[in-house]
Length: 250
Image (cartoon, rainbow, N blue to C red; front, side, top):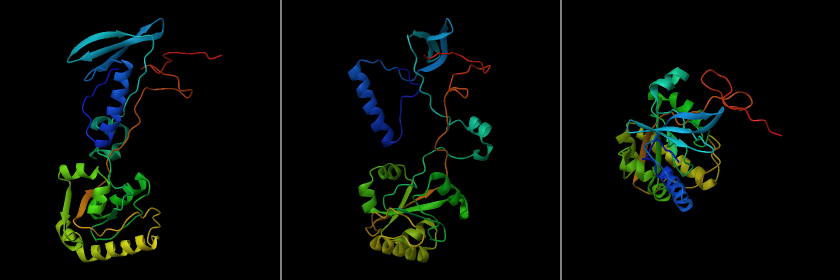
């Protein structure tokens, strides 16, 4: 298996990659990291292997079959601008807003403005419509205890914390009196099992256990459709948009 990248940042990806690596090792599959597929080798109009580039040096790997699993281009600013100019300048990190773990989203007025479990595009649009084009994810220590990935945000210095909601509101610069009302109202929704403001279905826990935390969030590039160019029949095309390989199935 040829992989262009070696290091994975997020906790979730580490778990997945570790499991895959263990499986490959048990199967006796050789893995080469920091290696880029520079070209596909062709023989009799069929792919017969790949040309690999590692540290500026190229070599060939012959194979009976090649499985190409390509990623997207979310971290390529030039391609993002080319294919969707509206996203120019956006960051490229997953949006932590949709956790479903007892957190709420508030704006700079200290108020909720959307069902936090809406789809990413809906939440992103709503965040952009708020003052400053961003919002704050508010949660407490109990939520942190039940969601280990939060520790990553804490370790990166992306969170603000305080012993009270009012103090937290002052730290992040929102209407702290309104924020206190918002959290109190949300806690009542949780106790009664019904969100009377936005109809949120998942109300797992109240926000009561200090310290309380806030993470400023804004829309970011989360996913792009990578891969090879294909036609309407999902057959691979070359750079001239001609069929690269044609299989006839009986």
